[in-house]
Length: 142
Image (cartoon, rainbow, N blue to C red; front, side, top):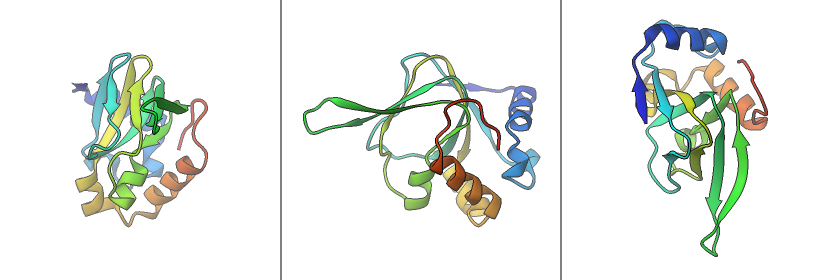
């Protein structure tokens, strides 16, 4: 993973995907741009998660382990997809392995920040429910 320190790119992405429809003041929120290379594991099944992630560029492969020791492909994810909603709300470890299929760019926001400032934000919760209900099959905006 590489952290991208480009405030103009971050602002462009937040505007493109209408993050202002999810948060009241996006300019004061500590978002972080994260870049992953093809084949890089973003999250390992069973690990602890620290940030809610929004896929804004690229494609992810989501798999789960089965009793035989093999991996079961659950789905591919495309922008705009959210990763970590279940882990945020339920406080459970990562439920699936997430791998970058190609170069991917994600916007992250720490669980700690969300729990302190946004956990009762109805716009955020509504968006998480909507994105959970219908996983993205292509570009989507909030």
